[in-house]
Image (cartoon, rainbow over all chains, first blue to last red; front, top):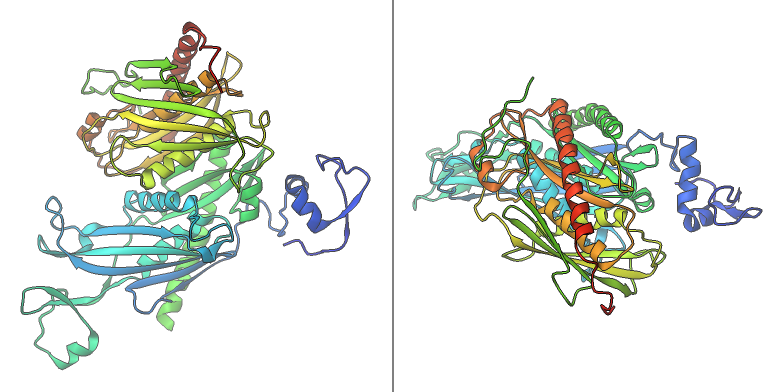
Length: 313
Length: 251
């Protein structure tokens, strides 16, 4: 946020709406002429929160905040906060894929996340992001569905992944994807056994100690092996500037954005640019891809640190 | 790495598009309408507007565009919402929004024809470009989407809808900066590019490698540009040839 609140700000030399000679407070200028405010910063290659153009905000991941779920993660990128939780349920697999489990991914934007979302007025971007997320996760093939199988043809896991946006401050897709990945990396498949009716039920640790004769379908709790983890970066385009990881204010001022998703091997999973006033040339796209590659290195480190923090605790 | 010439199910070469057809002024009560078909994929677009007032969150100093997408069958779900958003953002950059401030123009897209069989889809690339000043095509993208999607999807509906909406907007007389033209390119497992894939083809081509090189992507783009040139030629010809719409149409 801009630090000074009451220092006079020499108003509009360019596009300031005709306030040539006047002085104005910074906050007022920011509200009245947001584009001019941003352009003055962009000319010095910096943004109002003192970030250089290509740097993303501070990211943190906390694994396991939701105790009753099978895997969960709380991710913050700057102020954008996402909570992801996975519940596993046993069900019969589809007949054309008898040894594969399945995923159901949903993204919610409850009214807590933003003043523009109200119960009768759902956010327009929520279904779009929900669909983008499920496309990205399923098509990147991060999860091998065969690992979610229990008894071929009879029982397999259905993983319900729910992501809640708790604070919407820009770059929603990036934060949501990261929280989904973190939740999957935290996921532990519970132990199950067949009960007398031939149904598969989950078994908790305490029960196991009491009855050594319980036969387990899967021998030990295990985690999923994730290959080709997708990471993403959203960049705003404005004139010739590319701003990585925008805040909500930046997104409302400059509307054109590109989201690039690369996997952990640096291969392209998707590029998404939904319209917008600024046209993207190849050089712009290449630059966005380069920025995403840089971001992936940061994100891999953060994910690894959070995983090791969990093991220590 | 020369791409192989692929034999396609309906006998087209990899660069050949399906037959295009565009009819404008098909609906008499709408202010502008167009029906665009590429082979069996048919989309009908209708434009109403400009109407007074904008929605609460929209900027009242500019015109706003509202898009409603109606699928051929079924309820409106997330897929339709995504299409609506992409189409809205594309059309917002194509229209001259400052001419009629504080108004709303509604674009309704109805999917009429859709290859009905479920498919395994290829890696799809949808490229939309613009035509400027009746001459050169600006080699840039207004909107692009590379997705590698599995499951029930029709990749070529969105490009068809974009083409239809632009034709409908022109028919309604909404002031536009330029026209947008869209094409869908598919990348097969053997890394050769085919243009304008149909659902049947996607079923046949099963991909084994998901490796995605930037080179392939730019290769797709080149083919896409060339195809867009052809489509824009066609669009221009169809606009010039049809009689101007009825001048006594009421607003």
